[in-house]
Image 1 (cartoon, one colour):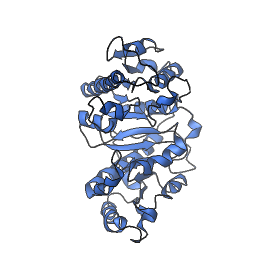
Image 2 (cartoon, one colour):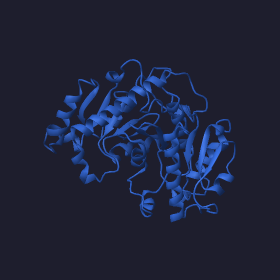
Image 3 (cartoon, one colour):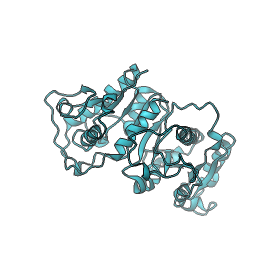
Image 4 (tube, one colour):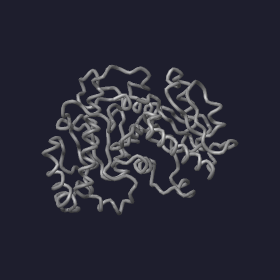
Amino acid sequence: MASRLAITCGDPAGIGPEVISAWLAAHPAEAGDVALIGPARWLEGLPGPGARIPVGLDGFSAEPGRPDGEGSLVAWAAMERAAEGCRTGEFSGVVTGPVSKERLAGIGWRFPGQTEFFAARWGGEPTMAFCGGRLRVALLTWHVPFRKVPDYLTPAHFARAVAAAAALGAGVRVLEARSDVAGVPDPGAWGPISDPQSPVSNRPGRGLGPRLQPSHDPLSAVRIGVCGLNPHAGEAGLIGTEERDIIDPILDGLRARYPGLSRALPGDTVFARQLRGEFDVVLALYHDQGLAPLKTLEFDEAVNVTLGLPHVRTSPDHGTAYDIAGRGIASARSFAAAVEVAKLLSET
């Protein structure tokens, strides 16, 4: 089995290249376990050992904070190379640098995000999920306009998302039981997963992937809090009927398989309840419902994990941040956590 992770540069004008370089400098012993994919000139200046796989024009050099079409082509080519390497067994998984979907669309890229790109290249039914030290979140929808979210309140979409949320929670528990792994960034920032007294509950971002297949069935033990769509989860139909007429009947039908599955709950309190230990995972119905609390609390630590695909894919939870690119102030903590999680998943 391949043991080397692929790391893509993301948009070379964003902060991806500098946080990758910072991670390499801080983790020289791990640099040999990754294959770095990006423009040749950038690769030449990176510290440490490890494979270097150039993409794009040989003479290309990005200017931080000034994205252009050539840089978008490099970001696209890096993703294609990583996806192909995972398909052929060259790589055990991929950690992706941040890209600009808008700029990629300008050169003909037809995907709402990297999640959909890798699903198209590998197959599978993806679910976007995030794991921080204190919050674990799966999304029913992600790159969907808000006005279309109600169209996705279907039994099939909930079945996929609830299964992914259960796998997220169960995987965290499985990997919690493993021995400590050296090099985890800022372990003190990661809070309890379910049992505040557990001596192994404060290890970050573990057990997030589709490849975990525990020998027992842990899904029934996972406690999943589901956000409602409307304020106060509809207030019994007074502020909206989707919870009463659509969401709760679907969840009731899934509860035999997932006994820890809640009914639709007010989205303004469910995350606080997770912080208090009531839930292992929260299922949010749309992108900002889940990511606003997660990024408020754990912007520099959380990891984006694509569940439901045949290969491991993680990424930091931030974007290209063109406005600070090249200034040396971007935090590499989320990227470091993304590498750590990808390593753990690829070894499982």
